[in-house]
Image 1 (cartoon, one colour):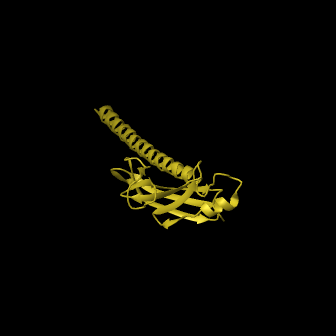
Image 2: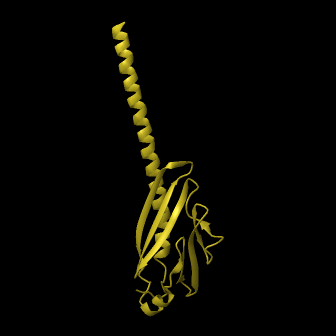
Image 3: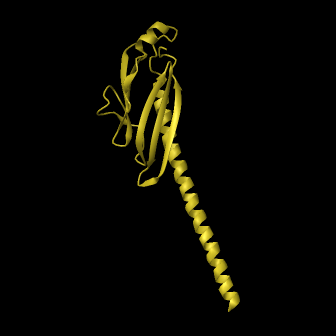
Length: 162
């Protein structure tokens, strides 16, 4: 009888340990997933911002600097660049309704959703220093507010004026 009770206590302790490891592993996977989602969104934003201020002729710094106007608010960045035909393309990256959108001039409506439905983006900020733009995203997994992450990426846009 004593051996049976001791055996049940040991089995109960091992079972509790296994359950704790499974919960910890699940949280680690969720955190990694959130970080990947934020990185993916930041990578698309970075690629887009590297075109800001670019000109048809990359050696024409004067033309590039003239195009490299970046403005907006804390949750929206507006910029433009020149396409292959030399036309000016206006763009806006904004945070609306828990998602990041890439639009064509408006921070308030339209555009292509960059972030997935698995993540709720709670903050999007831009800070510019010369030709460098720091993009910071903060978010949480949809349906799980206990796991939050923040991700900052620095983008060098050679076409922007200093």
